Amino acid sequence: MTSQADKDREWMLRAIELSRLCPASPAAYSVGTIIVDAEGDEIANGYSRENDPTVHAEESALSKLEPGDLRLRTATIYSTLEPCSQRRSRPKTCTQWILDTGIPRVVVAWREPSLFVADCQGCELLAEAGVTVVEMPELAEAAKAPNVHLALDD
Image (tube, rainbow, N blue to C red):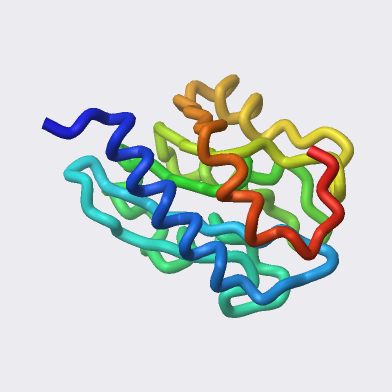
């Protein structure tokens, strides 16, 4: 039987593949996101700048589902980067998008460095709201790779 950690790794590797589709931007990260329902089936995916120069990966994936989709109440969202907690280009952050859907579990590969936002609090805000947040630091380097165009210190 496949463990939850093995499933998380498989889905995160697929999200990393999606992040490689992002058009490079000097002002934004390349991020991939996959949403998986309780049965283990992918229900949506997205990546940064997929259909709009300012769309974030989580926003892209969530916008492909109907508002109130009941599958989200038991889903897991895999994001190669911590969901944003501050945003200039839109009124709603990715953290707020996730909280509004009721997704109970978020898996990330790496925390947002301070390149664009001094102190991203996405993981903390989600956890404070009762969302289970799982970090996969063993995949952080792979998730960072599509962002070589940025000057990352972390």
